[in-house]
Length: 412
Image (cartoon, rainbow, N blue to C red; front, side, top):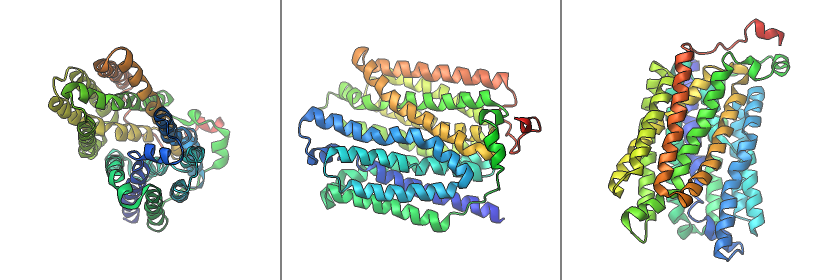
């Protein structure tokens, strides 16, 4: 009973902490160019360039360090990693409000990614602590909290600078993350099992996996999923302008993006529960196929209303994907290396987040906006087909892995 109470309480703490940290991290999106200009960059092209560099800097260092923090979490505890991330992010975010030039801004953003990772750390802790038969549902709840933070953050950042000033918003953000630090420190309880560190160091990560090929395919799937979804995000505003002819398409684009996120929030726990009962890979294949069809339909959208409905439905299809993928990985990874493998999953997702917009912008510029949807749909269809073949060739892939290494693995 105590263990059951712990994982549920941990889930709610991680959802609240992830929501708070994501709000704090994304609230700067609307006014980042304004802050760059305040730091002495006045040329329009330079403002845009430095804003892009400053925003992506966090993802760059986060992608590099996610496996490291995951491995350290396996050794020293996942709660310790969440405490480190929340305290470090609260300090660095506050320091951003004290930056004197754009170089300091970029450096602090790099440091944010280096020290941060609360949401990704929460995924690892929830995946490791939740009973396996409830893991996809719990990860769906957590995914909904992260997605909600991605909606509320930019909305809050749209009016906060007008109320308290640009620099003060960074102190507000630091304060919000500090609340997550307090909740994590005093409310979260981790049931840790002693690990045989010598055995962990002696055997390589992949040699400890019962199904390394399946895990590798799941990592590739998570990366290509983010690649496909993020390739569309940057061109939504331009597409809305083409459909409406409006001189102010950003409002409509914002509503459409929010609808997609709302669909994901609503569907994530439900699809997670379905994945727990029907099989994670089956849900992954079905959601990928549905998203591919909806992307093709978006390429032929005649007006903005149809596009909005299709984005809502696509958000619902995508909502259960990452929780199901994460749960599928968790079921195939022994306890002693779950952090480092899920850390690799986070890094794979960051790679998709960085490369997707680059592809979308290039294709949109050279082949047209609608072709971005078509190519993205093809990517998802190929991934769905590969995962379907994986399900058929490996009938036991939805069976959980044992937490103890086999007798054969002890000789490695």
